[in-house]
Image 1 (spheres, rainbow, N blue to C red):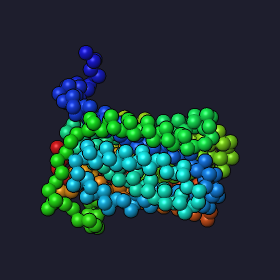
Image 2 (cartoon, rainbow, N blue to C red):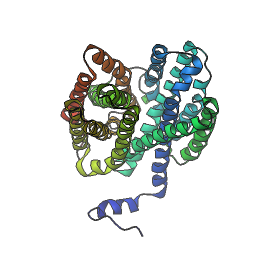
Image 3 (cartoon, rainbow, N blue to C red):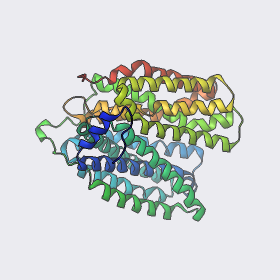
Image 4 (spheres, rainbow, N blue to C red):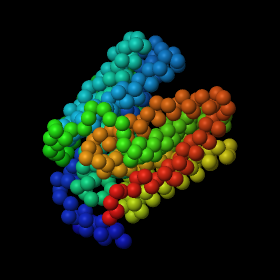
Length: 398
């Protein structure tokens, strides 16, 4: 028998009462999140090969890398209706398999136009799968009766790290990314089929109650989405610009810059796995508020010192601070209104929209002033997370 953790007897007792099928569904949902992350990490790591294969420079690549976000944004309006009309287990299986299949496509284009089209399709598949798997995670969390969403997103982070690491190893075997994309797509598809067989079935709602094809987000969805926007902006700044900051602004070698990105990513993944316990003890509002404060301290550490150890630690704090925010905005969206799928899609659309604008805004400020000033904006946004955390408060306090 597993030994109980001192002071955590109630949680241990609750776990022992959870049906085995629900525990399997939680594990399976985490695996689906990991597959989604692995697909993203695999593609990101092979972007240099894709650019070389197509023959595009930095400018063309910048345009192409906007396309996944555009594809996801275009698909978001349809995702709410799909979640409403279809059994979640079947829908997640179809969409995650579609994402695996689309992972084959970036290796095929030989022109910038075709590459942009392929990446729009990839973004649409990734966006639809993202909403569906988050809707299922909300269902699992509701059945559990306690927070599990943060660890689901932790699985996504681990999947992303695993995908990028596998791609790095594959480069040593062959520089050609086509075999890697094929093997990765097949492996992830097999894992997806096995995992989705353990997901929870859900009864589709009657068509008469279906949400409209398009509707402006409610005030609650908008406010929660804006908290997510701040978090996703800070995440994009950390992932896309931390290495540039350490290498360009501080003058340290590329190895140190790469270590900064790894530190940011690992701290985010670790904080997500710890996040559910924090949420259970402190509640979602306090957890997000503490996360915003942590991220703000980290951002201030980045801008107020030129000591590289302090800067790397600052990026680690940013990653740890924003880690629980995106999982908790999805959980909060799943409690809004009669159509949680639409609410989740609305929050995702607002939050992920910042993923499109973050690189340009950071770069634009850096050109006009400096990267240091860019991260002052990050500090302001993370402080806004702490201030606005109250919008995640459940409608009915228990």
